[in-house]
Amino acid sequence: MTGYVETVLTITPPDKDVADLLAAFLAESGYDTFQDCDEGIKGYIKESLYSDALVESAIEALPIRTSSVSYNNKHIPFEDWNRTWIEESFSPVAVGDDCLIHSPGYKPDKKVGYDIEIFPVMSFGSGHHQTTYMMAEYLLDEFNPGETFLDMGCGTGVLAILASKLGAESVTAIDIDEIAFENCKNNILLNSAVNIEALLGDSAAIDGRHFDVIAANINRNILLSDMPAYAGALNPGGRLYLSGFFLEDTEILKNRAAENGLVFETCKTKGEWASLKFLKP
Image (cartoon, rainbow, N blue to C red):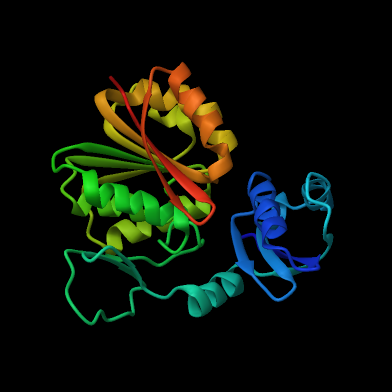
């Protein structure tokens, strides 16, 4: 299994806006995890995807020039990186009053309606990130028993598992990343979610399939590219939830959705991140 490259980006003087922009640019280039640090921000990318040009182009793309940015890298074996992340970062996440996302070894203080055990191999999808949290909120507030559900870019599978626990008739979870796909399958077993089908692939995997509800928590460019596939796979009257992007990206996504016959309904925000809900007439 491939290792990871840890990139430490030093921002002088420190600037949160610069850190957020760097994270957004690097996420579009394959970085899948970020952590704040004293220097500025740490990003993690699979070793096979890394190049200096990715980091340098992200720095060059910064419209804000009030800070200087430098970077350095180190190699981290996958097992060590994931173990460290779980030990240091994966504390339980409560979504509302009735949903708790936690590691297998954690013992909750009280029973909740939706208890989800996740052994994560990436931070996106554990519930800690604002985008996953907002998507889980949407499902808790609006999902109806008996609906069919697609978790596109499923990561750990946490949204697929939540939909299953909420009474979905059937659930499909898809990710293009083989590590995420295998982790999702393991988490499905961990939660005894027997009605979830996990698939390895991209939006082509949903060709000919139809769903009442689709959640896609990816990044702006993939969402823009795959919008026709989502619209085509959504049943009339169905709901599409999108996240994985910054608030400033909402208008371009709303326009793209409208081009594909989807009607914007609501927008959630958490920090600088956003989540959008669309309906198919």
